[in-house]
Amino acid sequence: MSRFDSPFLNRRLFLAGTVAAAATPAFAQDGAETTEFRDTIATVPRNASSFRALDWRPYFDHTRNGAVLVDLSSRSLHFWNSDRSIYKLYPTSVPLSEDLTRRGRTRVTQKVEGPSWRPTPAMKERNPNWPDFVGPGPDNPLGTHALYLSWTYYRIHGTHDTRKIGRRSSNGCIGLYNEHIAQLFAMATVGTQVLII
Image 1 (cartoon, rainbow, N blue to C red):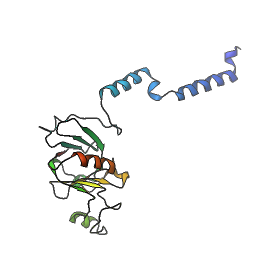
Image 2 (cartoon, helix red, strand yellow):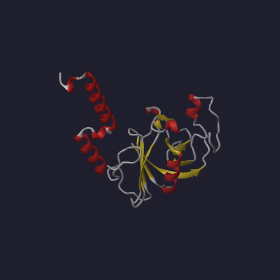
Image 3 (cartoon, one colour):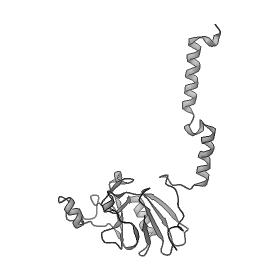
Image 4 (cartoon, rainbow, N blue to C red):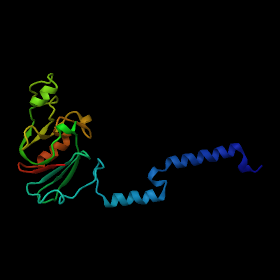
C-alpha cells in the first residue's frame, strides 16, 4: 500500500482541494465562463441593477425635451436627456395586472415635489377601505416626487415601500425608489416624451 492509498492522506487531499475550489470565485472556476463574463462586462453597459442599457433610436425619432422608455417586461425605466449626454437606467414597479396596464406614447405634463394622493374611482371600487386623500409624507403612495402624464391618473412616481420595486405591484403607475425619482425629476421636463412598452 503506497502512502497515497492511506485513508488519512486521501481525506486530507480531498479537504484541501475542496477548500481551494470553494475559495475560488464561481466565474473563475471555468476558463470559458471567465472569458465570457469579462466580454459581457466590456461590451454591455450595465447599472447596479444589472439591466441592459438600450439605445434610444429604435424607440424615439428625437430626444428633444428628453425621453423616457418604460419596459414593463424587464421592469426598467430608461432616460435620455435632450442632447443624450445623460443616460439613466432605473428598476421600477409595474402594474399588478394586464387590465391595469397602459402602453403607448404619452408625455410629462406636470412635475410635483411632495405630491398628495387620491385613489381613482376604480381603486376605491376595488378597495373601499382606502382613504379618500393622503397628503405628502411617509404614508403617501406617490413617494417624494411625481411626474404626471398626459393620461388621466397615470404617474411615474416614487414609493416609500421599497419592496414594490422590481415587482408587479402598482395600480397602473410606474414606481421608482425615492432617490431615483428625485434624480429623474431633476432631469425630466414638462414635455419629456414617455413611451411605455
